[in-house]
Image 1 (cartoon, one colour):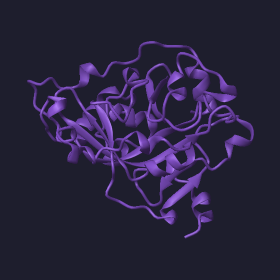
Image 2: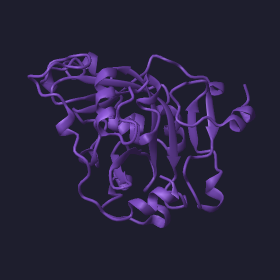
Image 3: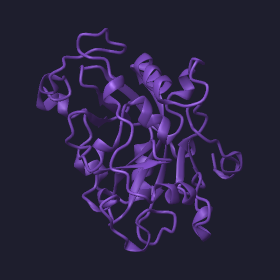
Length: 267
């Protein structure tokens, strides 16, 4: 959500690239782990015991900074229309603090139809478009206009489907096969790999049936989390260098490693 990207995203664009054309139909071979196509028959919704795996509204109901840290190690799950489930462990996030934050889309308390998700209840998705074709996904937190940007995932399941989606939609070296660490190492890459577009804007991550958050099995100590400056902020005064980006130390799936910040993080 840097200044440069923000200016490019200012113009409201109700439509972006559709992922529907790139998702295999139910009659085509599945590229990733398979589950039943009926969302209500998914093991993650079938009974109260299984539902405990899914993180609910109370998880998101905290300020942006602790929420950004709490996201690390949790598992984001995306279920496609044909039942294929894509999974990735969150390894990098950025906190945006709301009206006071000069790098935030809600700076000064500005509310627009585009950023409405930032002012909705904690756990609401805010998906915006950059460069007229790429998406970034945020999750609202406590505080009006505050949210957390999901920057990078460690792919865990459905990697071939992720690779297909990324290779089809990305520009440039489309013929080169993407390495695993390239699939979700950035906010727009993450959205491409999981087929996330503007249609997810203002959905409730605690209730949605096409995407949810599961509690991860990895526990992170304070020393395992690096606090660094956010990426691509541009000109936002003192907010440029504030350590509001958080990532898992040593993770090869992080989008940008900050060696200086790592040296300053106490072990």
